[in-house]
Image (cartoon, rainbow, N blue to C red; front, side, top):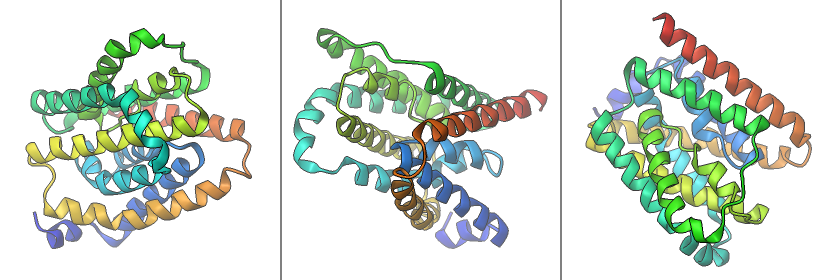
Length: 256
């Protein structure tokens, strides 16, 4: 599919709705440091197939995550620590893409709904255990593979990656940076997996590129909003909304 064909598939109203989703997702990411793919996949699932939604989020997700990796001077030691996990992410994503195909059909919708509800419940009530340093060598790759499989099935790459990263005892800035690294690797691995499945062509790249502007605008606004909004209130609204979206997704697929 060419870029022009991809654009012609969107009516003006649908295009505005998709852009609004990316603006909202960027705002969430600007406030809490994550959530762009989660919000996009949750809301876009109402408008299109999971595979189409996953293809659209590739460019905005990659660019906003690379932005999140800064500052570069602290990147080297962090990369050495979480590199095994990132190798696992790639392996899990590509195995999932090969075994499951591009996210589509009822199974993808159900998987997405389950991931959203589990992630939201963990965000509201969970607290990650501390991981002993000696366990990182085997646990990191395992978490990476599991994250990759979830990514291939749903297009969402926060579970179980984020709980694991939070259990490493990193500083706040270190955690934000580590999520940026992990999400960037997951985005690139997902893009390759979609390409291998024939679900990521020139048209999808162009359409995804158009969604970069609203995502960046939302992230910019979110970073400013972070200092104004109560973190506890935002957390409650964000995760509560994800539970409702996940249940809606599950209900729709099960009814169908």
